[in-house]
Amino acid sequence: MSYAIIKTGGKQYKVSQGASIDVEKLDLEVGSDATFDNVLMFSDGGEVKVGNPTIAGASVTAEVVDQYRAKKVTAFKFKRRKGYHKTKGHRQHLTRLTIKEISA
Image (cartoon, rainbow, N blue to C red; front, side):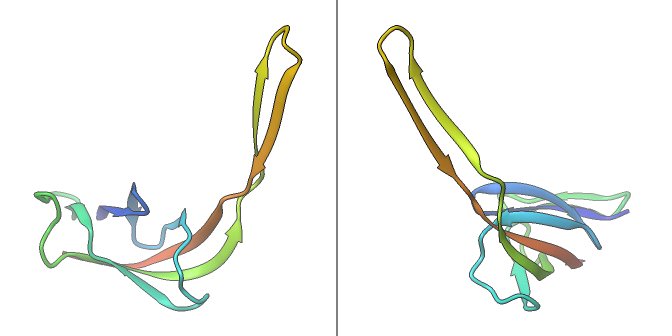
């Protein structure tokens, strides 16, 4: 089973063909393809290639399935005995991808 480790949005993701991942928002239309050239590692089941920092010529192609917002995350600040509390919410914009092809 082949897999790769890619970097996007400041984070690293382990992907394999047919897998579905959620990444930080990419400005792409639903149904379009995204290509990632920042491949840090590639394995075809036996041989492992590690980049320095990336593998030259390697790429991962994915299809954009959905653009959505994650569940609300609540940040709550509190100082005891001071009467201070503050609540703030945040919803992260995400892109759901399905991996189509890994080439090294």
